[in-house]
Each structure stands twice: as C-alpha cells, then as structure tokens.
Length: 574
Ligand code: DGT
Ligand code: CA
Ligand code: CA
Image (cartoon, rainbow, N blue to C red; front, side, top):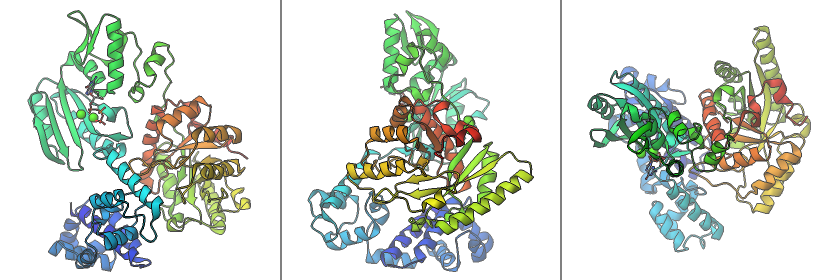
C-alpha cells in the first residue's frame, strides 16, 4: 500500500522540519501520517475516485499535504522530501528508533562523524567517538549503546498486539473451509507472550492438501517458505511468519499441548510422564505402545496426573508444582473488567470526545470509564491546566446528568494523568486534584535518574494523599525501552503503606511486566488494568493488559477494576 510509504515520508518530513526549528508544520505532517496509516483504502484509489478534493477529505490532510500526495502518486517522489534527503542522506527513521537518539542528534552525528545508519552509529559509539562531541558526553554515548543493544535483542520479534488480530483473522478464514475439522492458535501467541517470534497454528483435517493450498494463498501472504504434506510456513506482508501444522484427530490435544509450549514447560511435563512410566509426545500419552490420551489437552494433562493448565501459565515458573498441589490461580477474563480508568479525550489532543469514549465503553459492556487527560507540564500532549480541569469537571458532570436522564447505569469518572516532576511534586495544585474522583500520576520526563533519586521522586508521589494510581510504574516500553532505575521491592512496600494502586498499562508499555504482577499479588498489593487509550479503538487494548495479568498469575481480587463502581471507589485515598 502506498499509504504506508507516504506515512513514512511524512513522518520523516516532520523530523526534518522539527530539526530546522519549524514550529507547527511537523504536527501537520505527523497527523497526516497517522491518518494515512489508519485509512482503509489505498490513497491512490481515493485519488482516482475523487481527485485532490477527495484527498483533502482525509482527516488531517490539507491543501499542502494533498499536493504532496498527488505529486507522489504521479511521480513516485515528493520533491521537498528529496531535497531534505539530499541535505541529510541518512536513515533517519532507523536512527531515531534508538532510545535517546533524536533527529537533531542524528544530524550532528552525520555532520561530525558521517553516521548514516545503525551500523555506523554502533561503530562510532564503540570507538568512543561520540562522547567527545559537544552536547553529547559519556552518558549519552552509553545510552546510545544501550539503545542499540535493546533494538538487537528484540529484532525479528513482534508485539503481541501487532500480531494477534491477523492471526485471529487467518484462523477465522480457515474455519470457513469445510475441510477444517478443528483449529487453534498455539505457540507463544496462545501463551500471550509480550513478543512473538512466529505464529503457530494447528489444524485437524482429512484433506491436508486443500487446507495447505488455501493457507499459502491467503491475502497478505508475501512469501511461502515451505509447503509439505503436513506443514506449511509463510511470511505475511506485515513481516512476521506463520506456521501451519496438520495433525491427526487422535493427537490434536497432545499436539496442541506440545506446540503451545513453552519448551521448558514441555520438558517438565514430559519428565512427569516418565516418572509415571508413561511417554508424552506430540502424538499422545503412551503406556508402552498403547495410546491412553491425546484427543484433548484436558485428557493429556489428566493422564499424567495434572489438572489442565492455562496457556499463559506454561512457562515452567512454578505452575507444575502449583498444579500438583491444587494451588493454580483462578484466572479471570476480559469479561470480568468493569471499566477503564486511564483514557484520554480530545481535551488533551486525543482523538475522541468524552462522550464518544463513554459510548464505546458502554458498548464494551463496562459500567464506568475514567477520563484522565494529561496535565499541563506535558506541552506536546496539550496537557490541561487547573482551569481547564475544572471546566472539564463541569462538562463531565453534565454528561453524567444526561446519562442518568436516559436511564443508563453508566458513569463517567473524572481523573487526570498528572506528571511526577523531578522532585516528586505534581504539576497540578492540590485544591484542584482534590475535586477529581481520582488521580493517576506518572513519570514522563527526566527518565534517566539514578535509582536513589528516582525512588525518592516516586516515594514522594506515592505518599501524596491526592495520588491514587501510579501509572506505568517502571517506565518500560516493550521492544523500545528498559525500565528506569527503580527498586520494585520499595515500590511494593510503599504501595502497601500508602494504599497507592499500581497500574498494569495495556498499551505497548505492558508495564507492570508479568513477573512484577506476580510479586505485587504475593504482597497483596492491588492493581488496576488500564488501556491508556488515546482514541476509542484503543479501548480494545484491555485484553492485552488482562493477558499480562494472567501471565502474572493475578486473580480477580487483585485487580480493582473488576469491581463495581462503589467498591472501586473505596480503594481511592479519599
Ligand atoms: P516464539 O515463536 O519464539 O515466540 O516462541 P514459541 O514458543 O511459539 O516457539 P516456536 O514457534 O519455536 O515453537 C512452538 C512450540 O513448539 C514451543 O512453544 C514448544 C514447542 N517446541 C518447539 N521446539 C521444541 C523443542 O525443541 N523441544 C520441545 N520440548 N518443545 C519444542
Ligand atoms: Ca511461535
Ligand atoms: Ca514456529
């Protein structure tokens, strides 16, 4: 699709313009880029159908940008972009993915050291050519090396939310085939890991060839790596691979158990089988030559003396032992979630109005939504100041009155996402915070602090009687950024002392991570799963936070937004 290519060009142009200190234009280009990525139709088709006028109807596309689009469609190029590239022939898109590398830094490194891409950057950093440069220093050089390391570590892996919708739609399409008797997603996707290497799908069918033929010809298949009698492997347009395996009906359960993994979980279950004088493989559970289980996963586990274990727990992190002792956690489901308290509206530059967000939340079956827009320190996010928050408070009051009149049993709560400043104070006055239903606070600036300083900062915020929820408590972003220097034991201790709720943020942060959720649960610290949605569609991210909580062994009682509103409110400090 040309939409993607144009979006990349516009994002790059925004970066070039920002480097030149142009004030508003970069936003316009970024907006257009987002719009193009979201557009369901190829922008070329839009143009063919309605010309430049139709282009200008795309949200965020004005006259100047529609001219660029037209030029690109006609010539394959955007002249202004080519001009930028000539001045600065570097792979900006690649370079800025390194955490801590902005466009300006990239330009300086090109001008001083000729750095054009990641490879050059790594060479320069390893040779300590960066630290002596004006405005860089040893700390920056170290950060760049860490950022590069991070990119490498996750190379070739995709975020679960980038993959799951496609994997599901492939399964849905395969289900339509009458030749498909049974089908399931397996592998790390079924275990809902944060990142996925490849998608594994299992099928039971009496006509494997038909299923294989259909699979390799699905729309969006870019390359067929292999296609045999019972296994095919494809590369999707989005860049990830999918494996399809056809198995026998009598082995479906054991194959599902095997290919769901994890490998370490499998090794452990096989050992248990051996101890019982049995053999467990992808083909079944065998006593000598006789198959005693394999049709369903339940009977596979049962045959080796275990209850069925939820896929999210299968990491050999104590689940086998817990299963043997009848102590597996009772996991909950996205259906148990009653509301979402970290949601942004168009008041802070989000995409949708409070009412639209509320309507979507109602459609999801929620009982409440909390609007928590950014506050004033975050200028790029159009953060609200005290006056705007008070105005918003009145607006939400009116919306609730309207809902009540309509007889809806749904409530909009008013919060905010305040910034924890370097000294641990927040950027909104207490007398305004006191008026809100709840307050979320998070660290959004000066992330590279020494642990002691960072913890003093967070401690002060958690002790603030107006702060109810600590947003994305460790600052990590999957595949992009490690957590900042925190002492998680201390955070847990403070959460207990102060009654501050820890957030499980469902966006690509996935913060808290699973292991931390498990520790919080063990300490009796309460958590809340929030999406951090900046538009209504992102309210769907809830399921990723729920998966994360499940991977962290959390139960309903650990998560306060499984509660009805009256009980939820009791967990806030005032
Ligand atoms: P991924 O794709 O890297 O995100 O992770 P998985 O877990 O999906 O791994 P994958 O696709 O290589 O294999 C799917 C499952 O097959 C894996 O979870 C467990 C099973 N499996 C693969 N190789 C082995 C192995 O050498 N030994 C055992 N016991 N199981 C294996
Ligand atoms: Ca896999
Ligand atoms: Ca695989």
